[in-house]
Length: 204
Length: 169
Image 1 (cartoon, rainbow over the protein chains, first blue to last red):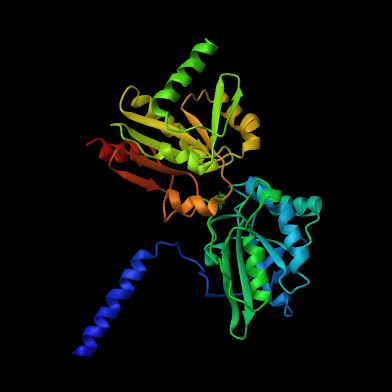
Image 2 (image 1 turned 135 degrees about the vertical axis):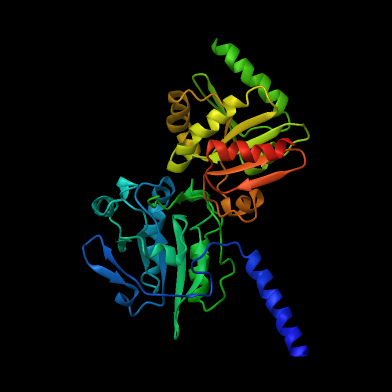
């Protein structure tokens, strides 16, 4: 009987936790992510397993048209410049449906990739199967994952930094701080941030 | 005429918006758009009056926001001279106010009170707006003296009317 009461109490406890957790579905910090296989702008399929040597990834849902994404393009390039050689390459994924947002078509992605000389894969979530698994909500939306013996674990979800408008006025570099901590073998201090961004475009 | 309009805006600002001072005021044609950081905006998110405020968070680059805007404008016209007030809070970047926001308002003949919230430290103020909000727009805050609710989703005219009724009782 005592056991039953305890079980009931635990059940109540978890129900409360569940009810309070209003965060939408998708990966949370601490979750393991599934690999995916998406077409890069060069026509090749790219998966996380394409980079067996990496210690992790900086996965960024971004796109062509969104002013926030555009504002961060140079900073995304800089992230890859800094962290690719340290084992945390950037992988960018465009999650938008080009029928809703024509500026984010595969061809336009190829154009933008060329114009900006992106030094990282820019993948197209054709059919929009990948971004819902992550629970990505906006562009840009970053997921830093770290490889451990069990797989790829999510270590950070959120914004790149705390100033979209002025890169020179940034005070908190969320992604850099997270990856630096992981490289140093430390815990990520700020592992979740919120930001305004463009909603991901799906057909109604 | 132009001056009358500016004067009217001025009067409106001093009556309803007396508590707060904008960081800057960006003017173009008949439009004068105050720009606030979140702390500057915050006094505008509460009231001691009997009015009901509908605060719509939007941006010219946000397609679903632009789509729902006519519903809000129609709503505003139907509630003209009542205690319901609509305020548009644009999240357009400061650099886009003159080139995107004001031309947008002009071309659609929107004269609704419009301010810009320009505060890059979003991770700080998004939870202050509403603790469960992820930062997606459109989003709307409706508040009166003793009631407030945040809606992180688009509205239709009918939904807006029915929601506001709950604040008018």
